[in-house]
Length: 239
Image (cartoon, rainbow, N blue to C red; front, side, top):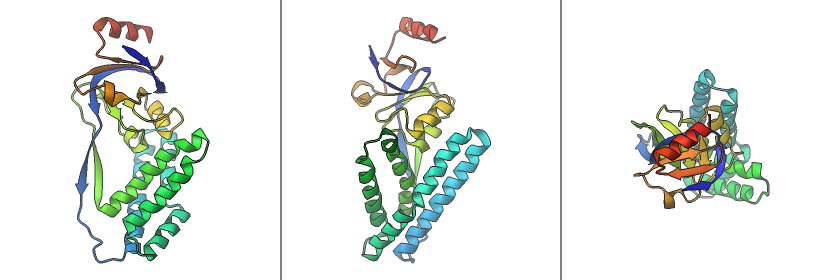
């Protein structure tokens, strides 16, 4: 049965369902003997360096619109007000991670009150960028399981740019996201990389990892376990 959804990136894709899975890699804490402000500054510096390296890698292979998105992430984590407010909380007695989390939550709350679709779309960028700093403060690295042996439709919780960029895998043929909209930066990345994507808010309620799914990102339809006749019809209509 087909259900009309919001299109993120046009195209047709058919494959086995996989929900995005993550694992955490914990690395040695080298900052045990330094104060919390120094620990915070070190985390920001390391996160910034990783973003810069990421941008350099993107520039070698892709449209500069994608590198500009990650450049904005570098600015987010180096925002002077965020840095200043975090250090203020640290001086008041908070640990670096708690202080930074408080400030980011305050920033997100302000953005959520803005009645503007473009600005609301930036919320996920703030989350994505600030997560890099939090991971450094936790001495962790978040890794995504994106290697599949057959054509796969990946189910995402939300459209994080760092995740969508890494969907450029030969066996990830499309994605369904529970949250997102066309104007988010992740949508630009998906369209640049030609990865079909669509929003389905209740994906987990209707789709399981035993299913195969066809997404028609021209008409905005999701077909769960379609028969061969339906697959052939949709494919032919898209040509």
